[in-house]
Amino acid sequence: MVYPASCTEKPELNIPNLISIFRIIVTPLFLIYLMDHAFTKALVVFVIAGISDAVDGFIARVCHRKTTLGAHLDPMADKLLLSTAFITLAIMKFIPAWLAVLVISRDVLIVLGFAIFYICQFRFEPKPTIISKVTTHIQFYTIIYVLLTNYSLSVKFLSIYLFWICGVATIASGLHYIYLGFNILNRGVKQNKI
Image (tube, rainbow, N blue to C red; front, top):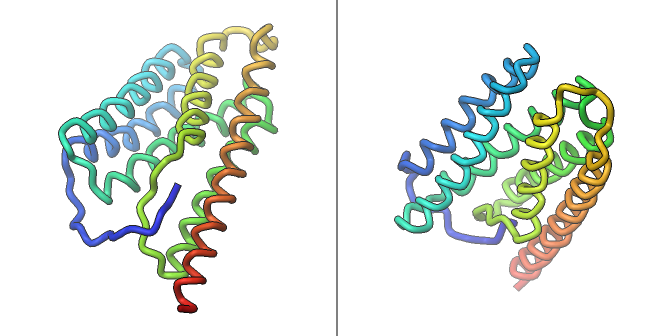
């Protein structure tokens, strides 16, 4: 989530940030493979992007390379990749439309929250909560599962359960962000009154 913080450091294009940029760059390639029904290639690109997400986070923590730019760039790359996957696969009828709507709505909600903080002149840095991290992992695994079972349009036995788990986690994460966002706004209002 976002917490009031100092954002005075200069943007730095270190290795973790370059890996996040790489994830943004490969998203169109992933989309092209999906639209061409080259599901194996799409799966490979998606898995590589997922692994790169873990790698940039690991490097940032272990090598003390966390930056404000990276704090914004990393979730942005994740949301771009996942939104592209969910929208495209919903259009292709591989996942239910309601699930794609939930995922996109949560991301829009988060972006709107950032916009509100910016308008209210809050200094902040994004910090994913545990529930947010779990939700992102579930969403990644959902896409991987769908890509692995793409050769049949019939709903697999586990698909519906995975879709519901993903949907519930997405809703829970969105509500948690709303709760934290209101707390931050309330603290900011109280500070301004003092």
